[in-house]
Image (cartoon, rainbow, N blue to C red; front, side, top):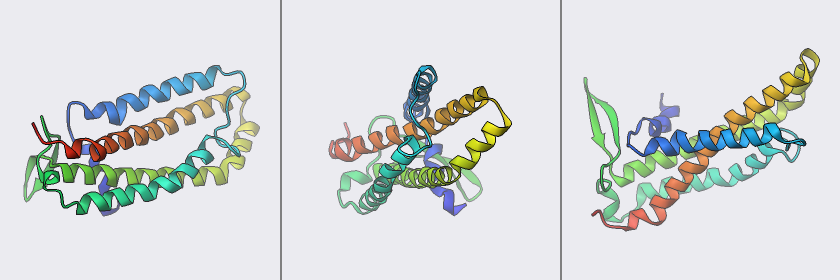
Length: 190
């Protein structure tokens, strides 16, 4: 489906990539969730001034940055950007006619995948956060009326873990993109 094509970034394979996509985000989310679970007065997640509304404020700026970065990468005139990535280049498996090929990625293509993914992910997290903010009171009231405070706390902890995993994936992938745009793209392949 064309609308979800930027998720192709997740199909890119490299020995270190899993750390940025899943390892660090899950570890960070686990630490944040444990801290939240043991706090005597936990921070607000969904309420006014809570985590989700604060993140949505940041995402309003980041969405534009990711789209601008994608446009810049797609049109860079530096010839080094069209070289294969140094070392063991990341690869992606693609279908060409009836055959599947493993294609090593050039810098431009990798960065286009990366910033396209970040733009889609940030737009999706923003939309999700907006929807959650609109329905927070109804959902919380339903849970309070039909369950115990323990169930409400478990719901909040599960939500925080999942939301922060996605959010930290956005952060680590952004930092990876910034590294490539600010430093690595200007270094020759050795």
